[in-house]
Length: 507
Image 1 (cartoon, one colour):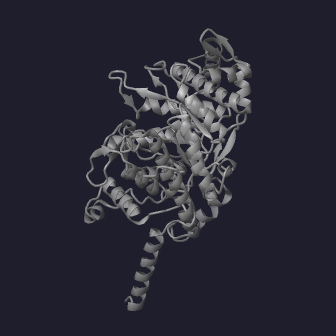
Image 2 (spheres, rainbow, N blue to C red):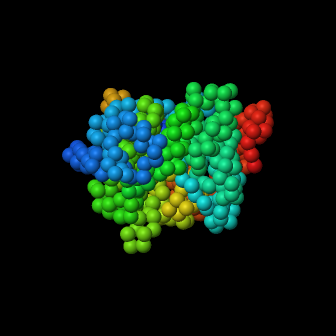
């Protein structure tokens, strides 16, 4: 007969086990920065052929619509003029590749949040310029606002698997472009200490915003010593020509030591060949043209080699952010960049789905896993984006953060060691209890090797029904709302905020 005391002991032990399982792991089994490169959609011969074609395009066709200031710098570096085009010989391209840093830090204002870009380390982050936000309460799309940007910034500040934050939406309630650029940067600074990124509409906006960054960094010139903000620039317009305003922004950013992510965003079948190989050759040539530009202006300046293949639905001409083609193209782009030794930036998880549904899950998981397995150093657009980049969602941020954890765990792979092989543990279990539950070997692996999701449901159907049969979106919505209700960071001191507001039109 079981004594009341032993029954209480069992209940107490059960509670302790439940509490232990509910507690966060002592060691994160899937931290950001895992190693990619396992997926290789291109052979060595493929990459050589694509690279050779890109070099030939730059040397024989060259770049059009090159602004005079840039043309002068390129010719001085070794380019030649042919009519209205600037041709870049292979020696110039290889010289730029040799001068470019292969690895560099993306600083966070909090040094513990800095990340290293390059090699085959994989980090998921954000991007985008969504003009619509999926409202957390109504579930309907509406115009994005500055308040949305603030809310997205403080939400992701609490999400572990987003390594850096680029503004994900455009504050459509600000019409003046200077006020838009200033308030976007201010919102990032006030609401997160992760590495951040933004864009500048025109070059004249760079210096005033750098003044604000200096205030935060500690004084004039302090930001350039340890830049914690990078910029997104698209200095090349496909096919094969420069964009004057973006080139001017590049000059201004390099002057202030702002790391740059030079983005090529050609679209297959529209501004680049529809064949995947032809697309990769042209897109690589265009991103190399950005690299040559940066290194001609300021040798050794850090640049993320952001070769983003984009796809359109050739039946309609509409941009398509999810699908097998964009998955393999971005994976191939990451593979090419890493093969060339350049810090890679690609785009993934840009689902075309408007709702958090099966299409959403399939397209996000497929494209982000492919980019990560291929070793994309910075995977942009991978958090929160929906509706072919037209929309951004709070629930999606939370869901994608959990998806990234699963991806990091897959990248971590299998550690084969004498301890992990478990010969003694196998013998002990078979000759003893006949199972591995509760054994020391199992408990160690439980803490170290397994990720336990908070959004995905692993209950039995009956237990799930007893909880009200919640779907993933409703659980993610509740978590997002809880973070927004509780987390109100202010990473600016009162003096910093006062000085910034005295100089700039903060709304």
